[in-house]
Image (spheres, one colour):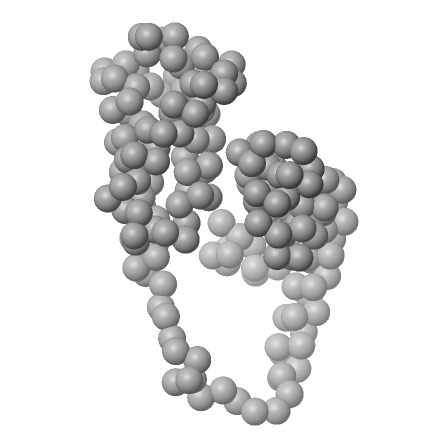
Length: 189
């Protein structure tokens, strides 16, 4: 099958085509499997969603085979994720000199403001998102959640990602409304 037909079937949501592209993504992950072990499922779903978006918007020009494009896309996403992970500073809890006693007044103020923002974001989210988050908070795996809801695991992962993005957009908007400095913090990106 030629790439144009593959793209059309992928954008139509053909299960066999989606699974074929997912297998290409998984195969491209092989060199990174050990270093990205904990992120592979989420990263696979993220790549599939971004790939579909790129194909819809015409960013695949056909200068290479679709399979090569997918492999290159996965390679760049994996490298980006590894670079981001290498910038994190890991500290052993045993080595920390934790202050004893109660939190400062400033800590209490920040925590209460952040709690108010979080509650506003939560109130704005649809019940479907809140239900997904309840299941995640209960420690359910995606497989268990998809069985409970009667939907495919990939569909569930896409819903969780959309809910997360919607919550982050809502949080940014709320913070800009109240003029908070948190709007530029790294956790909102």
